[in-house]
Image (cartoon, rainbow, N blue to C red):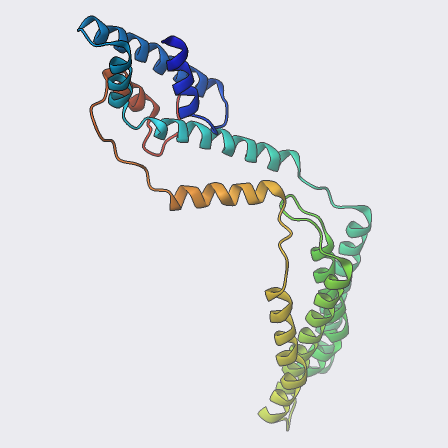
Length: 261
């Protein structure tokens, strides 16, 4: 009978992440099942009837195993995250530095032009080429940089993103410069936005909608865990329970808290 009980409990928790906590839980259930079956046999039941009644009284105990398994999966995901942090490569590091210098240089040139002429449009237009190039460079570098959660994007697609971002920046900065110019109406500003910003926004939307997932396996697994956590409702207890099951579930905080075994 002990082999039959062990086989039943093993099947009950088949598919769960094997952890020491889960093994201890299974051993506790097996031991108490065998004890309960012997008690029913002493009351006059045959072996099979006692086994059927005992497992019927067991109720829904998989909620504890769900918490134990989920906790282990979260630990594994966290370990994968910390163990797979990606360092910035030499090429990207140099690229980020150059792009940052260009951006700061553009701002400096813009301020110098503004304070020397006292014309806002002059300051904006002076910084335009540096800001556009550095902005496009940041987009390209960011998309082609591998991160802890994502693989790098193909450089051709990233280049398209960068060109589109540069075009949008060019349109916005040029429109801002025209807005502060004398004798320039709103039609001039809108006329600049039309050929640069609006088409660029459309291309950018198309690229984002057709983008394939670059998430690493641990991120996909984490998303599955989160989906399970919100989509799966905790089953309500039904039927009689034994004292050891109730006390075990209480000590493990089985209603949404990690087990403290």
